[in-house]
Image (cartoon, rainbow, N blue to C red; front, top):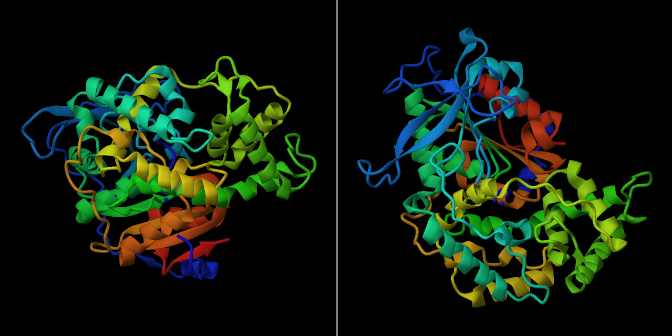
Length: 496
């Protein structure tokens, strides 16, 4: 889920502090890394448009780390070697968001956005987490209708009822129980971190560096907690709140904050003179216009052939709003839907991946259900949804509603990992001030949990994903300097 998280005195730090940088005292990995425990069978990676230097391999890992001699699964990973062997420092793991996503191809795409001095210093390592993609995969065989974005995100009924959400949770959880196999019970953040350490060992690296984005920040923080002396330079970008009592349940709740932080930016854009997708004359008009249109579509959906579902209803509009706030480049998608629906029409149906891809992505996101036990009582969700709808009408109760985890048939196999300030100080957090999926409020919780181990760079930008994405030049320079040289700001700073 995909796509998915603090706000006080840390913002007051001056950007001038960026000039006060200190080197980290972590040991440098040998340019000629020791061989792994067994030779890796590097082959050409599957797919198109990949860098010809990228090669793929697999490593065998225990399905259940509590039973290391039991059933094994494979985890697929890829590598583009450091471009200057004389300057090589080690391996930079690209940790994907999700859960339900991979980075196997990222050395060829996202990795190539890294500045030359970083690509010179590191092998770029991508991977598909257990259960996903070219690693041993899982699938639950969900119904086609349950793969709709407005269904996988738990939007309540127009009247606020959660009855259908609870039924959907039961139906999807039952499908995972029937079709997911034993592996789906062992998809968790802690196990993904353990798998990463198996990849590290297979590569023969004593330590790893990492760039984790979104959910990847939680994976990176958990790895840093479980294997603190295996970490070199860790960048956590667009940070989740690591509260071990809530985990993904808390991340969902933070969409209230994220939408409120970001919708005003859309409203300003959508009311600018000269904007061909302008929806209102002033920014103040955009919110009430959106809320009126969503309520009208709740009552009178518009047929939308080829879409899933095949109608434009209020929740489909709300989900489009949520998706579009991830990146300002996507604002036109929401604006054009608002303009079309206002005329009683619809744009062409959105293109979506094949159901088989969606099946694997959603099923492999089961870590959100295995990390912690979610409330199972409909009354808990009814109360939360009612409170949320009253206070945050844009998100209509979604952030406190029931996902399939509310009916998950298995209990967590271990407690969620608690992120602490114990261990080497090797972490740089980078965070946009306005991020719909991982809001600043949640990022400040990650900063608090890591304590002296981390320094945080808050970027005055909008969108999900800061470094080399929706951030700014100041933030990008700070992260690149850290990866290339080990220098971090002396204390938390703001990049305006």
